Length: 400
Image 1 (spheres, rainbow, N blue to C red):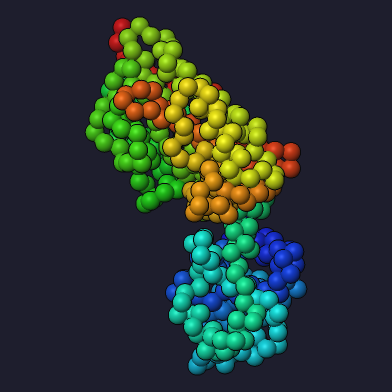
Image 2 (image 1 turned 135 degrees about the vertical axis):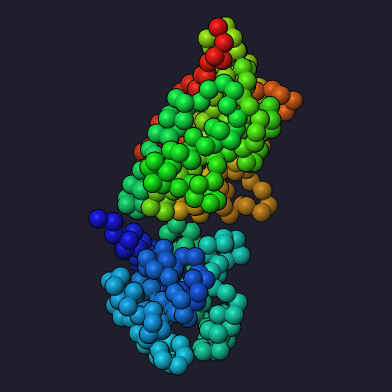
């Protein structure tokens, strides 16, 4: 039976260890109307009315909530105490704060990470009014590093859910390319993905539940766009980028196919070389990535492999974290830039999960290749979670 509190219990234990490691007494989350994105991740439920959750490193976790929200927080089994207020949050909040007497208290505020910036300005002002500006200023620290690590370093249950979403994605890809025929439109191929999701009772990891994935005939333009009415024909390269959400966790896998021209049994040399280069760049990146590597170092390995194949440099990052979002919190696998130095210089940690996608992109109708694999970081290096694409999907022309 699915236990929606399993992951919150694991994340709370992880948070306690992080608080101790960083010498922070606790993390305070204040939210209303589901306003803070990290709160439901930690407790399995969200606020309707104004609420405040103290997560303390000694294991004393306290929820202050309205009477109407009380029951669901009691059911979680996460909190040592669930306290309710009748007129205002302040009547309960201030005595709890004084009893806990934190020296350093993390707030969910950040200038860099949206998920670590859930405390609204209005609620921050409310904290100032309840505690006084000087008192709050004396204890507050940013919870950005805590929240980023909670999101990026996955528990074994989270990895199991990601593994399941990735395997479902692989299965749908194999099913789709068994059914793709030359002459089908991008939309018709997109319909096959939707059928696969519905048959497995899963939904798309991006957009609406049954939105099309990216399905691009390269000659029609390679971009993040919806499939169109253009039809495949012999000699085409088809790129698909597809995500599946399973129990809240999202895969991200891309595959490339080639439509054989009449008389062909294999792709032309330039197309095969482009595929081999993309696949080789993925292999080099997977072989290099591991605990302690910085994001820019990983990016440089995949980027160099593409360039060494004689192709333009990768136009985007060579990979990104995945998890509850297709682009999750974690280390940026991208070059050093003024606006991302902290993210790309962050050391990669065990338990983080990444999509790896050094891509061959060319203009003027030249071959493009996008293959994307998913890996989890283990002490010895990367464990590949997806079934790797070792060869182009080859679609016969249908002509004698």
